[in-house]
Image (cartoon, rainbow, N blue to C red; front, top):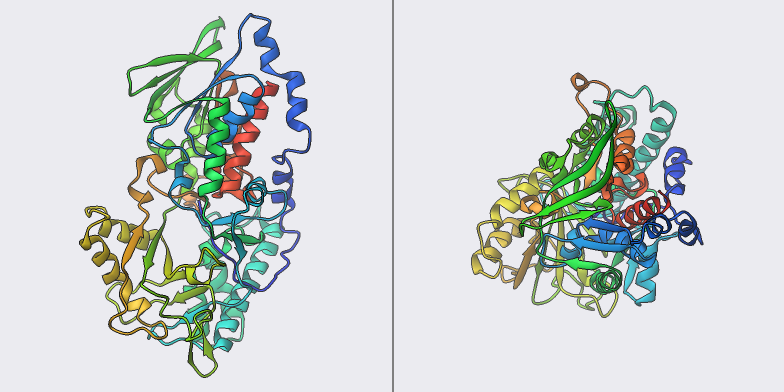
Length: 507
């Protein structure tokens, strides 16, 4: 669940967010709101029947654990079923960012735990062109300003014309149109179009912090709190969920409980079930719900997109790209220098694959978190290619390190001070694309729709998932049901789990 830094001028986006802000306001837990929920709680109703209510949370990612905490704190019997042998979900395998610094519970936890964070420098990225030459600062600045200016225009255009924008028109289409209207050289236009717009736009209107000390301490705290308030069962995969009820009138069913079956050949009955599995998993496993999910929900799951983001870490004996002083980027040539944190290579003519790539210099993290590592971000077909390279290999084998080094060497060898002897001593690649419990991908996103599919309203699709099927005692949470501004983020997952817990308490 990951975007990355803006590395941008401090644009003030148009009150973009009339729609987004309203959505976000509906998710924030205002002070005292969880306490107020107790006055309408399901607990009171169930105690009148002589028992505590029971809730099963499927998935021990951030959404699932936050949901379990809130319910458990209110006296609900909570069982968390997790298919992996650990908690954390996708967060357990390496997000880097905290998105947003205002009213952010994840940032609050980071501060409480004295985590090491840093804002991305508000500088244009250093950019290597298609020949492998590092562009001058002026050209990099021009590309960055053009890109962010058009993104600002895109927000304004979307707010004013959202109802009439064709659903097959993409942000890339808008960029091409605007670049053609501007008096800039064709070479600059081509460079701007190669910048990774989808990653740069992620949470563009939030200030993002790089979590230099990793999510380890935060995840440990959330896990500890979850075990305090819930019965957590690891290595337990849910195979089916069945809402159980009886007819009260012709065509009307009252559902009194919901059964969960696992791969341990166990069936348990609960009052409510909260499913927090990734959107990608839902897409392939809609048939595990009985009765079948309502058509509106199935349509929402089909319409929403699930992206592919992968990361590769290459660690070197030392940060050769730093200057002789050891703490600032080396100057490659007059008027040409590296951004201290972020670097991009445009589609190269010096490799056989011709994919543009981007990386973060982890040597620039604040002490004591800095280390001589390049962190590469990839998406789409490139992400799929990298996972194809590493999937058959043992991560501890020399062949694994060699496969990744062979792919990235043409890029990192362009960095200052690189000599033929500069080679990584360790490598690590994520492989969410081939991970069932990550949903065979990374996180939800909005892609263009084919007009032949009829009218598609992705915001309404997310709202349908958020609502769930409460009359069947089935609820959904996860980053794909979070506020629009927080889709695909750890904070969004937390908010979604908390929100659905509050709804259950108030039901």
